[in-house]
Image (cartoon, rainbow, N blue to C red):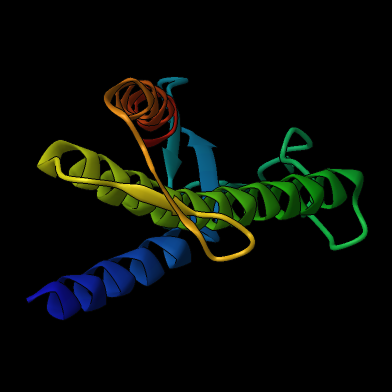
Length: 145
């Protein structure tokens, strides 16, 4: 259906473009009345009017024009910014998942330990767990929401 509408519009546009290049004829009748038409009249003295060219139409944009260069720079900057935001989002997504896991571990309760460099386990007390939970929640709210 959409394809058919496009074809119809294309045919209409090409038909109207032929009319735009038609000649305009003018003549004055016996009563002094001026007439305009796209077809000449055989009985009258007909003058052909040639429309003036419109000089207000903008020049076509070329690849070397300043406008095109500025547009291309802005487009490239926008793409680069979107790429950086996407990379940051991916990085934050992993960080947020890590924070969720740590919060879930603290909320589950039980004994939580930290390994030292020598491999010894040091268990966290309630005050340390409360402090960790507060810090992780703050980081999650700042980064992940």
